[in-house]
Length: 332
Ligand code: BYC
Image 1 (cartoon, rainbow, N blue to C red):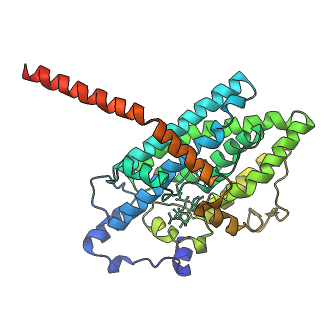
Image 2 (image 1 turned 90 degrees about the horizontal axis):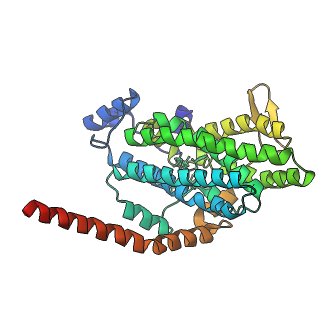
């Protein structure tokens, strides 16, 4: 796949002999599977790519709380509510580990949040879709967290140490998230015909956006070839998307739900499911800020940040006061 990406010319990669000695030594370490740590020398473009990917990832975790947050007050039972709250809090934690991992690359949290709030930084397209029914919460857990696991498990082995280590804990928590989503759907699909229909309707709306999460097809992915050479990505967007389809179809069958793709068919020769064309115009429209909820998500985030200003100021004032007290004690 990597060779194929290079051949498509999506990005022209430099061969070892074209690199200067420092860069060649860096690439050899990456090729040997040795982790790059924050204080190690790294090419500026490697640092920038990591900051881009890790900060987008962090923003996705934070914005990803919003569609689920819409259902906290309407969860059908106390137990479902407690589980949903715990999941949403986990997502906040994932965002914080990831901001910390990005900070090791010399970018400040204020800078990253500023870019998110100004609309400059991206976050996952999937979180720009609305959660219209309780079944949508099931779909987020099953399809979105399920896809996140497929995307993130390989990242535990990526070349940048702080990112790889953050991913280990994130992945453990994502497994619980995926299970809770599937459990919601099992209940609905074994419930009344109306409940099953609610689940089917949610699948019809979430299936294609979930496939888009993996990013553009390999030939149209400008960053993939270089990121794979640096082992920031270990598998291509299309490879991971195929894995998601192969893994999810039997789970949908078990639920008794129909995947909204007439072209979906097991291909004996390939040993994979074939599936229909993704509507890439929808994907690009969403990542350019024109999805169904982009404006609402950003407005809610900015408001939450502004509303929390008094608390951040109080923390700083308290820290300053403590520092003054310690300085006075030391001087006495
Ligand atoms: N949404 O060259 P490409 C999760 C952008 S969800 C928005 O392939 P790259 C998960 C991309 O940023 C939590 N934008 O990019 C679950 C680039 O724009 P810029 C978030 C997207 O970075 C299932 C342009 O399109 N997780 O974990 O090599 C599947 C060209 O794309 C999206 C993470 O962030 C999108 N869905 O590959 C995936 C996981 N897709 O920045 C994720 C870590 C592409 O050049 N991130 N774009 O302006 C990654 O694994 C990679 O960054 C991606 C994209 C696979 C998402």
